[in-house]
Image (cartoon, rainbow, N blue to C red; front, side):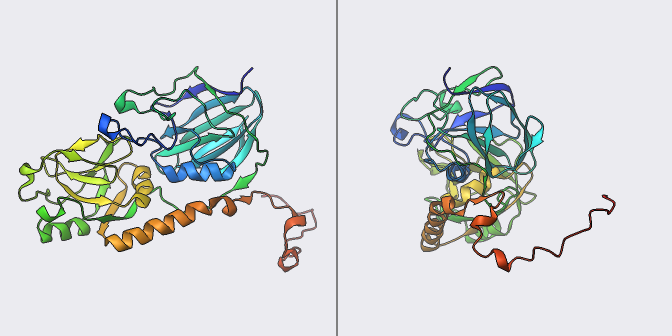
Length: 338
């Protein structure tokens, strides 16, 4: 029997995702790939494997899964309650999923997209050079109950690692740079955009999300003269009714709505993970500041593997063991347990 992961039950919209398929824009296919690529890298670090391997992206909730052989797994992205045969397991951590055991993943506690990684990656057939499902382009399909996902060979053995992750699952501050049509918006409107508290709209998906607010609509001068041109994830288009619309991983390749700005790539995971109603604030930064932020993000990602630490520490490997207070919590053993 080949190595595989059986899907016993799964939520809607869950898809296999990797780093996407660059190079197809001229044919009308955007890169796609994982909505939160940082979560993809975090899972790869926990399993000590390449960050381009495919994982299962779960939208809002997970499901129930069973392995045909012992598999290493890791869980990253939006935190969800998870257990193996009823025993709770840690998020942002790697584990062994024994053959025949049932992995249960519940609803998201925070954020939107959770990721289930397996040692060796999910090796569904490649299309246009990637394994990512791209629903808006008609490439692949969402996972269904009863599916069997093939798993690649895994040359690693270590599990039981955890990774501390900063909270990017409840909205927050987002940096953006000027775009090709930013100059069409009056200075007072650009300032108002920065001062407005937006909310992540309820109609969002992998293509993009509307940004709701209680303020007046945004309208540029000469917006109707904008020609359709190439667009990319992070662009903030202002639609005909003045509503800002933020483009994400599966956005279309061209568009004619004016763009008030473009979110820098390293802040896109926060936007992708923001749940409906989450507060969002936008701030214009210089190109120099954006490049510095991107370099810092790349450095952080390259250090993820060394940042992984054992969930249970072995005293034999703790160099500063004698600096810990080991006896102040000792009890007689006869106390009542509350």
